[in-house]
Image (tube, rainbow, N blue to C red; front, side):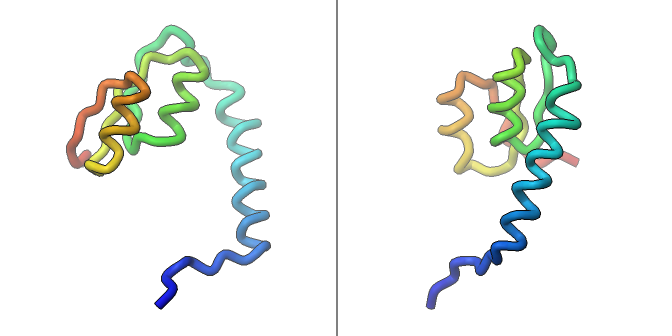
Amino acid sequence: MDQTPNISRTHLDEYLGEEGRVNREIWSVIGVRGKTVIDVGAGESTKKLRELGATVIAVDNDPEKVKEIVEMGVPLILCDFL
């Protein structure tokens, strides 16, 4: 049985629009260059923070992400965050 999610064009357009809004309204105004940032829920945000010049410490509870995050050269704390 195929378990691929059915994503409509409308949902994709909404996601891409939201991604653009986040880029315009959030990433463009936060000043993280030269600062240390703790990124809870490592992934795309970790990459973006590094692109913006932050030193990132990643926190996640997904063992699958360990390799990806470590390959980025980012310290990772593998735990649940409450």
